[in-house]
Image (cartoon, rainbow, N blue to C red):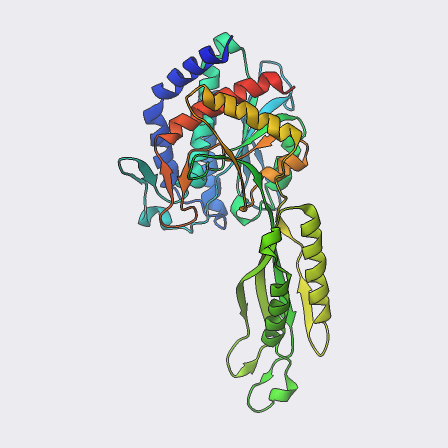
Length: 394
């Protein structure tokens, strides 16, 4: 069966469910699911589990370390083992927005765009993934069953400490991995990403009255400021790596020498060698401030490995371009500085591509948007690409 015939039938299946796609998207956007609100993230997971079951998928939940659950939905041929070779789709259902945002800024649409918390990053991607799977089921009569799994994670926006190991585990038997992050605002899919780590600095000193006995104290705030100044020397944006201390705190009052201060750090890197350099350098700096009454520590990193180019990923991108061409799209690939889960899959040796969700922009802001027409459009491309990858990647 030619890709042209598959594309025609996929297009018809998606177009038939167009209203249902936007209905599910509105429902999801109007549900809070901030990363730090596990109950909200799990309630959205329960709702999506019902959607998966209604589509004939088998659901499974992965709970780790007390965090929100990672949800899996699989569609496998009768009698197939749980870990049968299959195409893997991955999307995160958590957002950066706190509880109450959905009520304050609910889903809305204008002539060309949809808006709301997480509409593109990445509730739109999840909708595209689910309806692509429905389209795959609609072509089984001519293409046969296409083994597929969708993994809906819970904590991507905070570094995937809970869901990252689940992704790695499910990648072990995957044929390919499609990540449902939004396509770039210009329509490009993502063929490479920087990595990123989240860390925390803690500095302990000695409290004292800042007026009566200032000299008896050791200021943790002053120590933290010195660490931050040294960290600032490590960045080299031209070479693709940087260190940012974006949140700080400490002390208990202006009249008290602070006995504790802390900072939250984000590092960006384009290679594992750069990551190793930054970690070694930061640990060295922190160690140097364990003196003169100060005690400084740096937490273990939590975050994302870089998603780098290789022959297998290039072959998958070529296939995606072919699938896009079947629907009149000339898809380009870009490397982005923003880190995400795709690095887990490519590090696991699975052919990987990212940015397979609908087109969006202004992510993580009150103006986040999704281009409405791109929702069914990208669901079609995804469905055809999955069907093709299932046959070509064994």
